Length: 149
Image 1 (cartoon, rainbow, N blue to C red):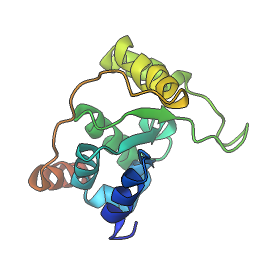
Image 2: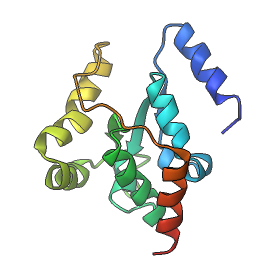
Image 3: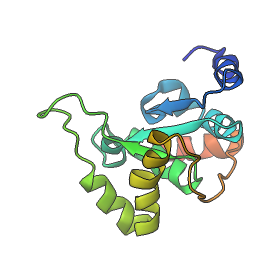
């Protein structure tokens, strides 16, 4: 992830588009500096996390970041990131079920159905909970506490 990503996001927005950052939970820069995600969301970027990451399919670190970002209301979408029918199939049902159990059906509908429909139809996202800012201290504490597990 280039250092000038802030500028890239700004240029995308000035051109009239909304940036959607995909699978940041698997990006080493976002893993080391999760407060970056918070600042980008505050500036209008949207975040898409891979359902398989939330389910633990890409390891504990990606699953943990997805959980922490959910707690901070920094995720706008879950997607399959499907590549084929065998290794990375387009299955979202297990993610929906886990999300509905942990955060409620309304959250699962918003993050796996309603927000996607809005984007596809060129509409603003339906109202959701306000993002909570991620401080650098908080990010480091959360990340290091995860390493101690």
